[in-house]
Image 1 (cartoon, rainbow, N blue to C red):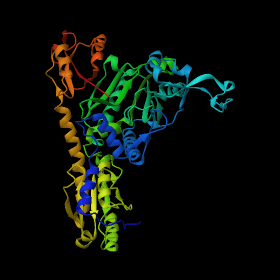
Image 2: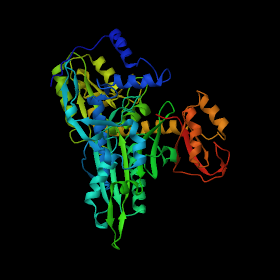
Image 3: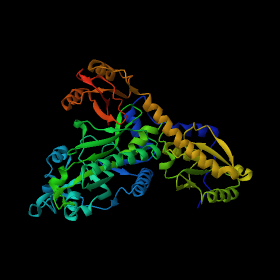
Image 4: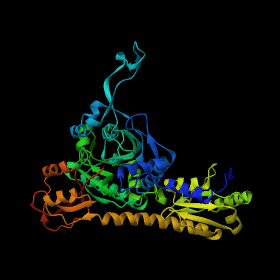
Length: 516
């Protein structure tokens, strides 16, 4: 590798380069613009020529790969499913069989009607009228129906159950308003689909998967979440019950980070998923579905990043350590020393992963590299020059600290220092996010008038925890204020109170807030 590079910049040039670390807008000035600036500054993704779609670039896709690999390992550890793959295209007759499902997704469906194009008289590409499909195909927005058709063919007896599938794939939902990683016309995700012989096992699966997601989000993504059940108005289309994981972003809005659904026998009946039980009676299966998507990357960005750019929790970082060569003297000795430092980490591991060390040997100034990796959120940066080589040390900067803070570590202490520091950064990111969540949930709102005033005040950022009578019709009262019941949290108090919407007696706790 080439580690020569240019000479270190002078003080004035370094001061000028330092301005590159600051994003063009802060979180307080405009949170939406800040979010997009973080994505651009970290080179995570860019808009595609296709409206509403994005190109996920290597640093951004590397984060998704870490999510995918570690979550897939978690699925296998808990024997949640077997991975498979199902068609991108769904016949409309399958999709239309479940009425509530169609109603929930009809406005977002992309539909294929022709299988060939032709040139018109003006050399424009148009669908060939002679190549029209006998039945239009929906480009999958979700796969309950197509997977249900496969289950129908595979399940005959109770001995075939449970049947647990998962697929990692892309889906298409033709969104009118898009935002990278949060809401795009095409996105990546995993979707699990399971069939069970009875309701009890299916509901247990729904809860188990919500718990698996919560463990992953808190331990790997360092994102605290509120786990609970969705209100009837917010359930997945066609589900009898939906569990969710709600996270709070730094602007106080909710982001639904993952869901797990008990579908009852609705999809089994529409797909014909039947089996013969132990008494030789024919029964419909009980099914579940559950999923998370690249929206988790957006959640990570908005939970942890600061006004200098992205901050990646070490367990999700593609590179734990970035080595930035510096200086113009003793280059040969410096390069040999860098290789020695790299070699120290050949067998080192953090949180079950090899410690990833990347040497940035591009032909750029060290200051430019420093600010680029600050914006990209690499957990640790090593500066190594002739002085470090001579003194057998490494100058280390942490992304969770101010960029001027540095520590000099002796090479013999480097590996344990890095492993311990990565753990500290991971814990610190989670602790900061958890404190923000807990200090931005108000319990002082008691009636609908107070609820309106609370969210009309720009200084009141976050959620409210209030009582609700459980009447689904009352959820419509929240829509004019762009509010929703985010969930019925798992930790119900059971205390008596008054419904915030009707004033009627109520014991159910709900979380209300604005969301993405």
